[in-house]
Image (cartoon, rainbow, N blue to C red):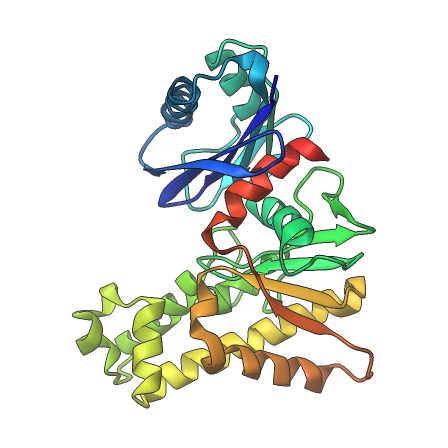
Length: 318
């Protein structure tokens, strides 16, 4: 009997589901909305219903299922499968997700939960831009920034399971805009897609002029895409925002490099759309900090929108 796997990528706005055959090929995809207003129980009730639908649609029994891997933007106690907190889904915290879902599905099914940076790292290391590298850092840059750490071809989770939450390293203690992590002054609070918009809005309230208000319709509707358009039109505040992002991302990547001495960075996530507006500047600043000439690779993720479900399914093949 062929053994299938299910990979689930949970985000703040969407949930992607993938069905993989016995050769680990993606054969079917599903997508639903992610509802941040739901309780932990209701949220995972919906996921359980979708899993059951996938199995029914494809005439699968539990005997034909290797297991279910789930990646989430959360601090997760990996061995227990307990979600400690989720910045983008704040109602999902201190919740025994693995145990709950196992019971909801009637038992007799293998379930693994992990942070979505870890699942992304597994996917890109095995099938994407990190192929062939013994050590690799997967660095998603989107609503938040983080990292998944591959050492000696294996994912490094640390003691409790959330190694790689590098975006929350603090650089200006007690200063700046408070992040969802509960601190002021972490790297992510200066350069992630959601936080740079807050910095822009703060400056607009202080009287700084920008075409971004007109482009978006109002200050509270500004998005990273608005920044790109304004930057291309020479807007000074957009230029300032890109410069701040580049500076803090360069500090972030350099600190990771000198801490871990891993020379392959694979960047994924929505901020890749900034392209040459941002990433050459990050590289230039990184090189200015780096005082040796050993090769360091900055690469773009290769798996597109499917990396999350691929990596989640790969949890079952460790």
